[in-house]
Length: 118
Image (tube, rainbow, N blue to C red):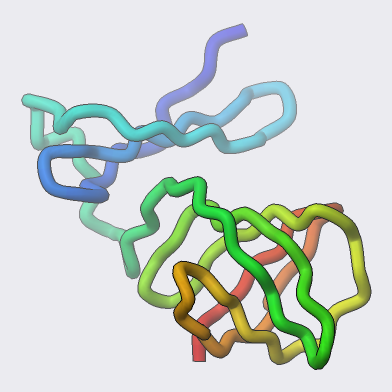
C-alpha cells in the first residue's frame, strides 16, 4: 500500500517533518528527515511546531503519580503514552527532567493522552 504525502513542515534546525496519510484508514504517519532541498514543498501553515520525542515522564494527579512517555512535544502541549488507563482529572502536572509543567487533558485515545500546557 502506498502512503500519500500530506505535507512537509520545518520542525528543527536542518530538519523537516514529513506527514503521510494512509489511504485505507486515513491514519497519519509522520517522520523527521534532514531538510529537503526543494523548499517549495514546505508547508508554512503550521501554528505551533511539534517535535517528535521519546522522553520518560510522570503525571501527578492529586496524590497519584502515573508513569508515561512524552511524544510530539510543542510549546503548547504534547501527546503522552500512559503505562495504564487510569481515571484522570482535567488538571494535571507533567513532571519531566525534574520540572513541573501544569497542564490539562484535552483528548484521550486508549493509553494515549493529549495535553495542553497552562
